[in-house]
Image (cartoon, rainbow, N blue to C red; front, side, top):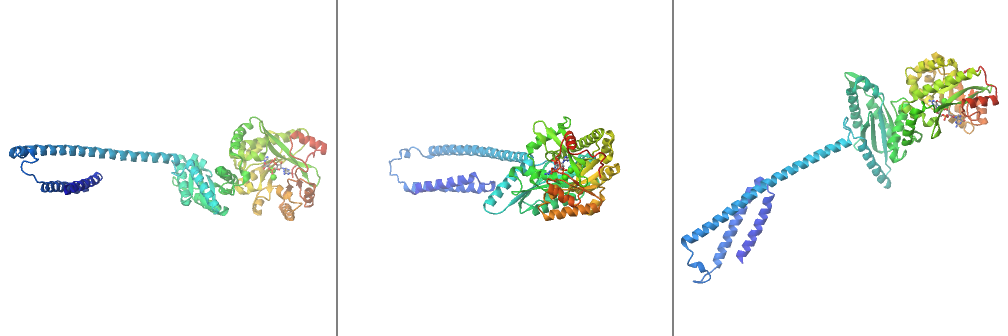
Amino acid sequence: MLSAAIAVGASAASLLIFKHLGDATRERRLPLQILAAIVMGLAVCGMHYTGMAAAAFPAGSVCLSADELRGFGLTTVVGIATSLLLLGTLFTSTVEARLQVVAQRLARSLTETNAELTRANNELQQRAFTDALTGLPNRVLFEDRLRHALLRMRRANQLKVEERIAVLFIDLDGFKPINDTFGHTAGDHILRSAADRLARLAGPSDTVARIGGDEFLMLLEGVRDQADCALAANQMLRALGEPFSIMGKQLQIACSIGIVLHPDQGEPDKLVSNADAAMYAAKRAGGGNYAMFESSMGVNAATQLELQSDLRQALELGQFELHYQPKIDGHSKQMSGVEALVRWNHPQRGPIAPMDFIGLAERFGLIVRLGEWIIDEACRQIAAWRAEGVTMSVAVNLSVMQLREADFVDRVEQALLRHDVPASLLLCEITESLAMEDFKSTQRTFDGLARAGVFLSIDDFGTGYSSLSHLRQLPARQVKIDRSFVKDLESQEDARAVVDAVIRLAHALGLGVVAEGVETQAQGDILLRMECDELQGFYYARPMSASALMDWLNTRQQPSRGSEAR
Ligand code: C2E
Ligand code: CA
Ligand code: CA
């Protein structure tokens, strides 16, 4: 019994030791091996001696070899058996040791391969999700983060925690000319520094991404309101406004930022394109500033793309046309001139309103050519009317992009010359907000135009933020009071007060006043009592083609021969 117990106990102990030997470190192997040998020795001795002590053999009993095997014979048998046993053990242990080495080598190379795979995988991920030049996330990663942010926000809002996220679209102003002048290395340097500055402004839960060229996106999480966004935008404007040092020179560039706040403005899948539209509005207003998204800025992206490609060919295909809306003189009640308003006759979509394509044309660099066509066409029409004996002054609307063209004034003069039209018959309108946002180029161009003898008019007056001193520096002859004031004239006392004040102020500055958007006789009467000089609006006439205008004139009154713009 004791023998059996020792056998079982020793077997259990050796199994345990064997298990530990398998995963033992090199240093712990030897002590374990010694322990194994001791256990083995004790087990063998224990079993042997207890077994022997328990056995009693009476003479001539079970042990048949009792008398034959003794002395030299027994020694030989035991010797051979022991040698065989030892050799066998030695062989198996050598084989096992070999196997272990091979297994270890295999395991090591497997870990190495795994590590390499992980490295390669990481690199691929890195490339798929980051921008190589700046190391910032790219558009793919940005959109992924945006998706997660939207999910988080929705969950928070379900728990009645009010959360908002904002997407900011940042575009450097005037980056292309710098890249062209100083080379790509300088351009890359600016992009990298700009990326660093933006990344430094981002909080731990925000994402800054570069999505191509000089365009960056920023995702702000946990913003409260527009004021928060404005604060962030101002910080970015300041950071990017700091000079960049390029080849020993200090270069300063600005940026334009478009902001969209969700869920207040814009559907989740349009956040980036809406921020883009707002950025464009900021750029259009002169750059170096930010703009919050407004619903009027977002035209469906697919439609935009389609219109853009159509717009490129529209000029060659002669799809544009000018319509003319009469302006009525306040004293004589005669027509004093017209405003030219461009129309696009799209072959499939029909007529498209200027509001839906002027912005697009500006954005894709088509406005300068379109604007040139408009001025040329207006001059051609003035000449054609003159040939019929009708002297008509025509006002054209200018885009701020045209004002920034260095040779704009030359081109206007060339158009006048080409059609042999006196400069005094052409009037240029520029909206107040655009004139004030980019005051320098407006002033330069207006000065040039005034020298050429072209009259100038400030459009949509009352909607911008002009200071009186600025207005006085522009050689304008006329202001046009915005439709929104005229609309409220009958119903609102304060609209009347504003219009009255604007008319007095303009007269004090020696400017003529036109009221636009006059739709009722009552509005016209109020304006006439306030001594408004000219009236324009659907009440008198809608914009119409050149030939329709002649018919209108012939049925209504005699054309005002010789009426020059004032
Ligand atoms: P705007 O310069 O303020 O032009 C006046 C707009 O008011 C015109 O819209 C005209 O049709 C509309 N209007 C005239 N009378 C009334 C009225 O009594 N009631 C109402 N509700 N509206 C009236 P349109 O032709 O759609 O032009 C919209 C804007 O598009 C223009 O505003 C101008 O900013 C721009 N635009 C039009 N033609 C040109 C152009 O040839 N070049 C450029 N750069 N912009 C243009
Ligand atoms: Ca106008
Ligand atoms: Ca206007």
